[in-house]
Length: 517
Image (cartoon, rainbow, N blue to C red; front, side, top):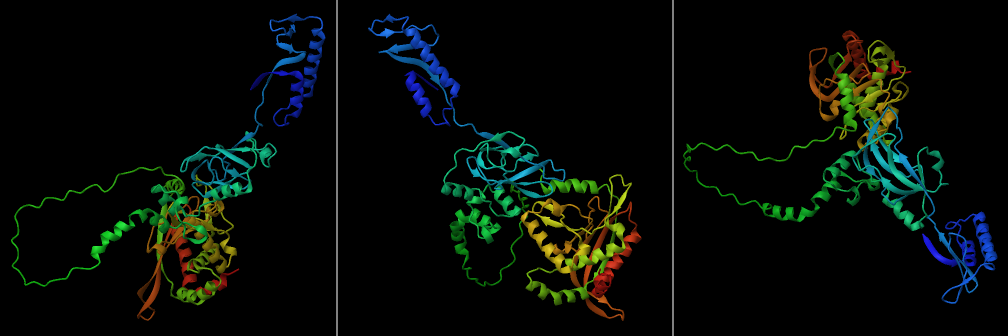
């Protein structure tokens, strides 16, 4: 705010000289100011009086004080200006699909004061189904963050406030309140802010380890590919301050003491004093944490599965022929950079068996009044991750080759370990398999994933003695298989016939050629 006694002529001149973005006075206001000057000069000749300082003072019939000193007109005017108005955009968390209403904020890629452009990463959130990176739709400056790391953010609530120009791209696309961007910074400054906002590469397990030890990932030196932070990097960062002490403490143990053989001594007298029980000291404190993310989805799914009347069926398959087949083709797949396991062959055989037994590739509604037979075979593979059990599925197994199945499995496993599986990878399954053999399991009782009606668990392949048709003991590669099915719609004999057909495919891989389409 500026209040001053200034000459009218100087006022008019100064107004015209002001930059347009600071003083925007309408032309009508300027004309009115000139007209008041004319009226005042016209009345000056009619009414005058002398002051004690021998100056001529004009008495004006106005509430605004107006004076003339040395025949110069002076007006008392008040001028006011404000900075250029910007729009403030409340960037809200959009609906990411699948009925998700809340997410956990895993990491911020920006902070207050950072410049962002369209499609720049703002944060990473995790729902009970997938991990999603949120990108900006606006170009501007971050003015406020509404959540801290690990907070639960609700859909349709603000994530950040962004100051952006009114004519900035993306401003007109928002139905919420908007922001305005201040003057753009230099190229060097912008580059530095982009570096600070760059995403830190780390798996969910590494992020959890860093969070539990209150370590900022930006402070850890990355040794992985493309700047990825590994678990060893976190452990090295934790242990680094005490490395010297550990080395000094372990130094005396480097050389073991010489052993001296002494003659045998008589047995010592056993003391009759009762031995005092050892008092166990506490090794830690209990702590409670909220169930969230993938584990929250697992709680919901397993609770629903508990209401399904389930029966089990177990068998063992002779995988000797399949072991020989894999050893012959593995070299070819290795040359193409595809990790080839038994699972792609098993999945293809399962799909061919499901074609003959379509009721196992179906789903039922919650009231179990309708059963839907699925036209596609989207076979899910259960994965054990740091964030809980997830079951991504391979789409259209019936239409893919075994080599294509291997490549798709590699993709899902990589995304699953990194916690980057999308919603499309985790939804739409029609049949599921659990490879418990990968962690050394033999038998299991898998739990059905609603609304599916069946699931299988594959044990490890182990060399065991078995009798052949002539009564001779021979070495065979045996895999134990466990099935679970919804007994409301699946009979035990139906599951047994399905298992027998799959067994014939895997024990005689040549039969697969007869059923290929």
